[in-house]
Length: 182
Image 1 (cartoon, helix red, strand yellow):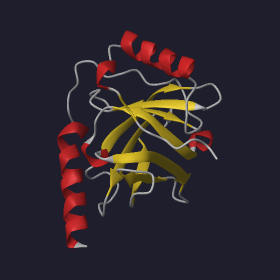
Image 2: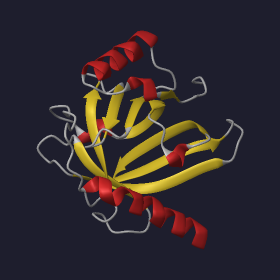
Image 3: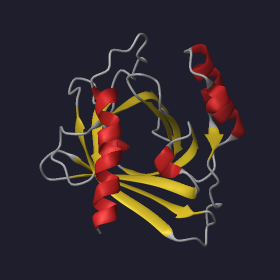
Image 4: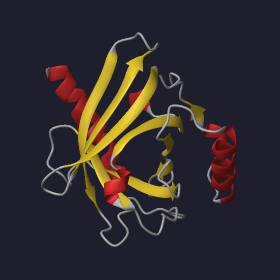
């Protein structure tokens, strides 16, 4: 248990410099997010490499509204194979931009909201909330999420082309293996 808390504290501490960094070219977020429609299960389709997801497959993120207005975040994945050990971490998000709901601060671990948080900016969103693309203020993280375990190839390619046009290094995107929908 002490190791888990220490690891969580170290992960949180790693984000402190990112929270307040001055970024030369922050990405533009979507104009508006209906936070209620955004809630639910999302499948990770592709991502920039991120240390806490190393060796995981079948990664999902599930969001639900808490009574106090924060968002419960549960990230899950399996170690190495779909039959591998389940890895799960729970966090909390707060809406940082209440005009658009497109900028959130997310944190994992035993700290109060506002300490050791990281940026979660929704930069692309399907009209029917069928996909979302999330980055950070400094463009150092990137996730392509879908409501289904697989994404239509044409939709994926369109997202990647748009990310290229916005100056993201899409060569760093790594696909996330997902099991086919049952």
